[in-house]
Length: 456
Image (cartoon, rainbow, N blue to C red; front, side, top):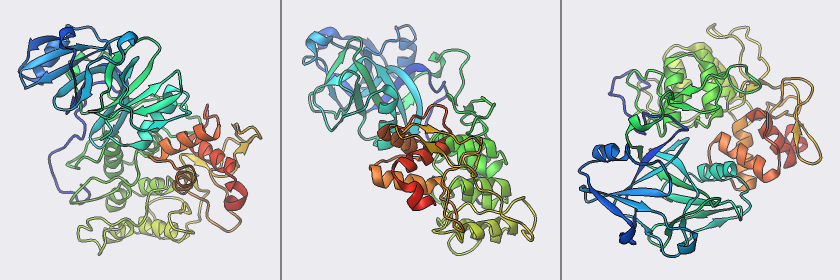
């Protein structure tokens, strides 16, 4: 925790197996009931016993397992296309175990998993059209971040994402080429069931930030010692909080944010410390500077731990005698609207004689503007340094957080930084292939017409 007190570690998500791998996952208050003539039942007194039973069963999304009355495990096969109105019904009440793919996304203590070619057919909630791919569907589910809406189905044939509420007559159905069912699960069942040779990582997220880093090391969630720091709202956010508090590893911090870690997330009550609070409290100048560049909120209140009245990052820095950090934060707060990336160079001096250096967002120096072709496909300017938001002369540039706020407002989007930028690119027809997150945000802003209006 930010004040250095000690408390046993807590895990928001009990997930010891591989992110991105197939496996069995447990959903609380979920079941498929009816069509009992198609089910089989085995005595089972615990989830651990269920894991042992599942170890001998085939891994196929089309069969799920209900653990009922803490005494029996019921195997429930999906019906085929010819019976899509006559399957077992999607309801609450028991604990449901499904076989699916871990998407790697965590939120509010839940794991988002995906099951191929099965559905809770009929009984639809809200329907969202124009969702043309699995990736687009995944981004939308993540952006909505509604873990109480346990199920969403992406119908590949009609490019629709459909809410699937419980207790509305939806049927457990499966057949080839159907689509993907996204479920918010509570935990993985039996870590020993995961494939050998995998680890707990975010697939495809390279340490070292964006912009063509040659490093391809995966982010290993939970690898940074917490030293008593309590968990945040997800495994990703917990890792960022620990990295900011206990290390100077700015490359990993950038990679975590690029993978969707929330800069406004905290380590909970009673501390309420964001990653920037942590870096400011513990005197980590380069980490604090990097978090400001990434768009961390500058004035959120927290437990001051005896340092000031409100526990803002600048108060925590001043109270600990970290004057260079305090001066850097003060300069950042003086930017237009606050939170700008006008930060001093160097780290650890008193701040005297420090000249502002070119702002960097998501690891990219702001010096050359992203170019968007008339058809909407972005291309980088000749320089490898791609600008996120070029301000009018004499004005501080937009941070990526400010750009995301505009994209959320104008496109009615929700979610963290990466989710919003990805979803905006999908809506605006901007190709994200090979684009750093910062450059992609700039390209989306330009398509919306903000380049001249807001960025000079």
